[in-house]
View (tube, rainbow, N blue to C red):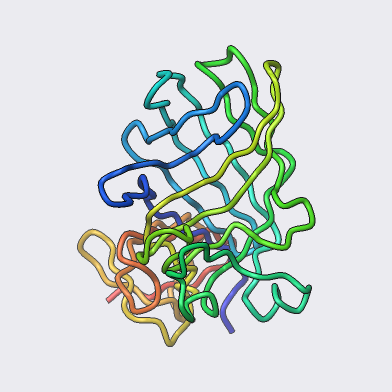
Length: 234
């Protein structure tokens, strides 16, 4: 029997491109209202315990204000689990089709913040709507605006300068995919070796693998942490 292990999947996220107009964070009201785009790109990490983290730095296209993202999510759910709570999915322009059935849905954690200009102000975020009718959704059309792999969700915010509303509008191929130690998964590629998780060659190390397998995503990196992980190299 395979030993106990935990894993996380991290993918690159970018600005949503809507007909040439790019945005990653839209603060639609309040003292920091502006469209914000990534300084480079961001990262979205999904963990096997149903939590997730969104990180990166965005810059206001009009104001030049810099925001450091430290956004946490919890209670990751399938559509079956999410809809059983009487909740729905977001699809404003009708781009989602049936893809919502394959989304992962998250609730924003109360620890989520945006740091302004290196610490001038701290913006505290809260899930919107407050009743969690819509979640932060991940999948094709997930930003509810463009019909490509993406992520998106609303939030409200409070800060030392005032309060407002906002939206994450992201593009990125970030399906939760298969457990990389599932024996039915495709090969897991490292730099020059191919690995399967089997019952041989026990290791106590942290193993970082780039995954190229159906249903996992094209730019995903799995980090598997284990005290009793079995790996067979061949």
